[in-house]
Figure 1 (spheres, rainbow, N blue to C red):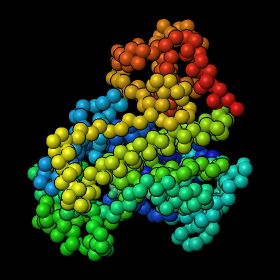
Figure 2: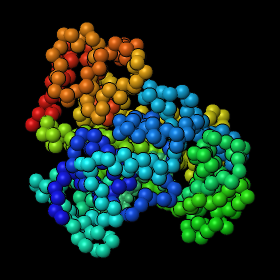
Figure 3: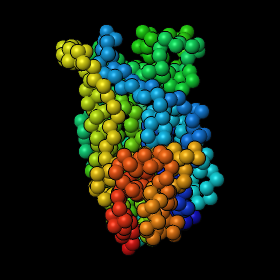
Figure 4: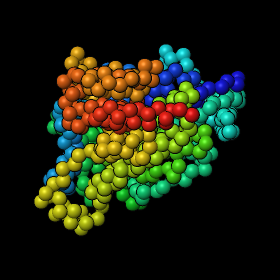
Length: 490
Ligand SMILES: Cc1cc2nc3c(=O)[nH]c(=O)nc-3n(C[C@H](O)[C@H](O)[C@H](O)COP(=O)(O)OP(=O)(O)OC[C@H]3O[C@@H](n4cnc5c(N)ncnc54)[C@H](O)[C@@H]3O)c2cc1C
């Protein structure tokens, strides 16, 4: 076999699967190569935010996922005596993204749903049990050598672009010669999922960070009867020993016993905090854990990877459709890297509260926070400089109003740019009618309210639902559209 593809994705984890779906929406020919036969089964992501649900909505799987999810109610941080230190409540209502702020789920379910969605996409070819073992990046294409792990045979393929969605130990990142910027936290934790045998409403549906210096721990109420505990390993403790069932039950006994639950899957992880010092080298790029890793205290590792995919896929598509210049791809790192850093740094701040094991320092922390518990809200960083006009609202997430007919704004946009525009202003303009831009009249009640709040008469929304720019008059809009057009003309 020697086939040429628009994009080859190395790694079919959740980020690779999200990227493949988004590229398929734009009709690209995609090859996905995955070493494992099946979806990774050990406990990992359990919460997804509203922005990522919006990406799932774009792909067309949000409604399939919803019955297998639970709306997240938030997280409390308590000290060794159970007193409140930090309150991160999530509002019970649907927010301005058109979704609840947080959802609990089971990562293998998300991955299986994303894979199933690709099954009827003829333009996407998936090779399971295949490993990329050589990458040769040339000026006009990238050649790959791929080993069939069933019988050891070698295949060759090529692509215009290769994206390493190949996880924390990314071989694509290594081939690119990229180092990681170490943000300094590398703690070992034991993560245990259990399935309850009987109801235990007393455990609660709110996640809890037990900031106990004797053993920092986390409790998460998953979907259905799945519950999770995460327990920090102390210096000198051996991960393998701690993963034994008798050790696990001994650590969990303050909450549950074998009469209450079955151990589903324990795993020991080192929670790293790193960002790659480069996300693109020529025709090679990285996304997801290959580009950044964070401890899971805010549930943001995979969310960041899904944002990478959503940021990158339309840029690749615009480039391959021959409408954009390669410079557009450089905005992928310039926009995403500072954005993910802000999440990781906030997580590290929370990690310093949770992971304190010195009893005296923990007492000082408690004295400070018990007086006035911290109220946490999720960060909403702006994208770094890139493909937006740098105005007041640009580079920020667009809202998703519900239209008068009950549909959501994104339903009419697809995975392309959209222009929400006041009808009176639209009447004065000659808007592109080549299908590259979805024009939505801003006359619906929620849309006019949003426009009024921003003091704008038009909002240009990118396919990843970030604001490219706003305009409050015809010349302003002409300038915005001409900038947009210039970035897409070679
Ligand atoms: C305990 C824990 C809790 C977490 N909780 C959350 C949470 O609540 N919310 C959240 O958003 N995130 C969370 N995360 C993070 C999240 O799980 C990861 O960020 C996410 O799984 C990364 O996805 P990925 O697709 O980038 O990488 P991976 O899932 O690691 O996928 C990479 C894939 O590439 C394949 N591969 C590697 N090399 C090759 C090769 N050479 N050829 C072919 N295939 C290759 C691998 O087999 C693998 O399938 C958590 C993580 C942990 C450990």
